[in-house]
Image 1 (cartoon, rainbow, N blue to C red):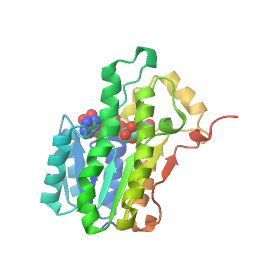
Image 2: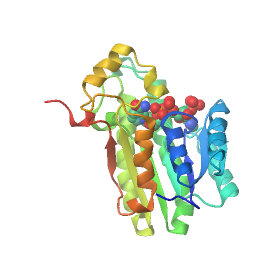
Image 3: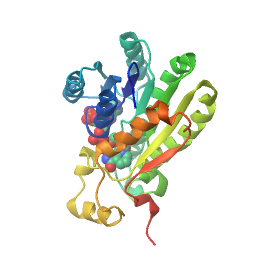
Image 4: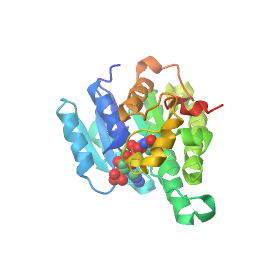
Amino acid sequence: MDFTGKVAIVTGSGRGIGKAIAMKLAENGATLVINDVGDSAPAEQTVSEIKNLNRQAVAIMADVSSSADVTKMMETAIAAYGKVDILVNNAGITRDQLTMKMTDEEWDKVLAIDLKSVFLCTRAVLRPMLKQRSGRIISMSSVVGIIGNAGQANYAAAKAGIIGFTKTIAKEVASRGITVNAVAPGFIDTPMTQVLPEERKQALMANIPLGYLGTPRDIAETVAFLASEEARYITGQVISVDGGISLGKL
Ligand code: NAP
């Protein structure tokens, strides 16, 4: 996989899966736009690790659930590097709660950051990608968007929404050489899952046929493949990278 000359934006890439994706794309030659919200230190750290690989990178702080922030981020990215070839919609949060007790705020926040952001960032890159008649859009869904999970109705709705969105945009832009896919990770060892209680982790592990949590790198390898020329004939798909957890139990 060779991304020399390609410009990639990875949202939420200061840490976790997003950082691993950014590093993998950079290792294979891409120029990176690193995005995060809040404290800029993790994003700047990712930028400096990419520069150590002799690749170009810039950090752009933006809340991807804000239309104004996304517009500004894309304008800054285009001003810096002239184009966007690859968009990875990775930023996401959880606010778990049983539905009966879930507040409007918990619902709205997860839908805004996990789903609306995917619409905002995708819409923002479509015009330049349509013009250049090429592009790759990859969004982070989840096994939870496919099989559900008690206590995550907001997250499951957002992650399932990404799947419908992905298939629709794939149809809208296929004639212009742009592919649009989703990746559905299972349980991956990142700050998002490190907060789970140990007994919950053990219970999860018992449901993973491969018997262990995935790593951010496992997800990055699949995202990089989907972003590559080698994957040019794959569009509108959801690729599960989950140790088999979505197979379910008999
Ligand atoms: P993580 O470690 O919590 O990292 C999420 C990143 O997104 C952080 O850098 C965070 O920045 C950033 N972010 C949050 N809100 C943002 C916003 N409004 N605008 C811009 N950036 C924002 O999560 P992860 O585990 O790497 O997950 C990455 C993606 O994979 C998410 O979409 C998640 O739903 C999905 N996923 C994860 C798993 C898993 O097991 N870990 C499984 C399935 C799917 P701050 O640090 O500043 O908050």
